[in-house]
Length: 336
Image (cartoon, rainbow, N blue to C red):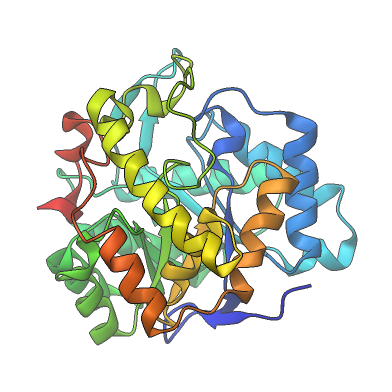
């Protein structure tokens, strides 16, 4: 069982150094095995990975109900240790289409009510809007979560994919424990203005996409066929020449990993872990095998020579293609 912990910002709880991102268990990367998903959540809790990240719109509620089942069937001691980080606000159609965002105060409370019911809990540990609603001032959205904190339905307030100005406005409204944002060897935009801002304000980072949706895991084959339901089928980094370029970066990284006797995924996760004690990577493991591999990153130490070699192999801005399709990139406050 891992004893590696970090503080989620200066006002948040102690959490494991790695969290489990559960999105991929609800169809975002194609079909997932339900039994293996449940077993993976149980294995994570047993290993001390108690921070579970989900969203009310993942699989239109499927992901929260899956976590509910996993918690109900876990030993009581493990169930009570679980910390639930929940995103809200993204709107879905019956066909799975994405219909925008809703950050109005009434909607915030509605989303919370539905998530509490689906998760089968009386409170959510960290509640956050998945994206900034351009029609609603962030102060109103955060203020509504703050009311839920006062009422005991939410413990802490988080943010997701917002830029430095929005972070400051949110933090002036209520205490913010963390910002959830993509951060990996090939997604380093957070380092310019966002990370300095969160550090100034004592806000932690929960980093998703640390393996860039499997792209830099060392396991993605260039000829892999992706289903239409798989987000990566439309992700620019997985298309044509972009994919070939990005997988060449992975092979350069593989040489470094092999010299250290670790896997590509482990060295990529260890790199994010090493960016600061205020950063908690979220691992999107869908199987116990991948979870075990990710946990091995906690024992990987990167010295100055390793870091130089990694930077030479995968420089900042080395990736080909944006991290989302153009329409979704335009919705990211963090990219403005």
